[in-house]
Image 1 (spheres, one colour):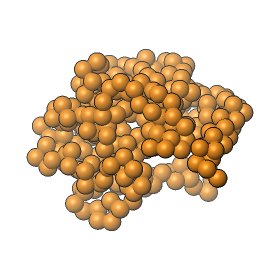
Image 2 (cartoon, one colour):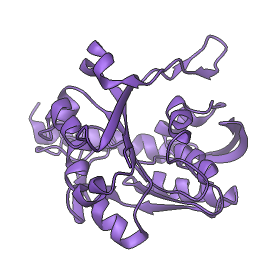
Image 3 (cartoon, one colour):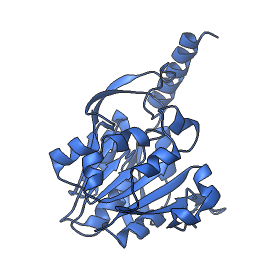
Image 4 (cartoon, helix red, strand yellow):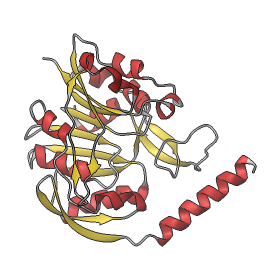
Length: 271
């Protein structure tokens, strides 16, 4: 089947499924806090259960994820992690969350509002090397060269421009489906200030199609400025339906083969 026709069929099916999705409000414990959450897309079904406190957040709480901190959450989806981050920084802190999907961005802001989390602001925007606009696909990723999942122009922010607009962050949380190298390339000034970072690194084709690599990601965090730790992406569902994690963050030099699969990178800025 010709690629343009395949693309049209794929996009039409996606749009049909999303139109038919039954958006609803659910109530669960998220990192020990009872919240009402709007599930707005099929992707959001993963949030229709209790969530533990994520190991990466426990790790970061020992560093700059503290009351009063400012956090950028890039790739926020329904805002569940952003709400956990907002709980960690408290009413005196601030979380600026970006989500490129318009339906999920609206759900994330609704989830902040309905739960009275005023320190969380959710923006309909993507993160990238440059501010302006960026082509974004219906699959939740920056559009590839042939726009195989369609492409819509979305407002984009570089991390450095986001910092100029909202203030320098103490922590930057990145989950951008393979676009992480491009996001870090737009963050040179922020990197120099040495905040903490969390980066979900999508090893392989997802990272490679935008010119990224694990080596390039690590080069943004020189050893004289950052201590690097890594842990597996191991959030799993137990037989009783509950979520659990057994992740342990260890120095990057000790993790060996972990860097050959999708992993979580934490960079702790030195002072």
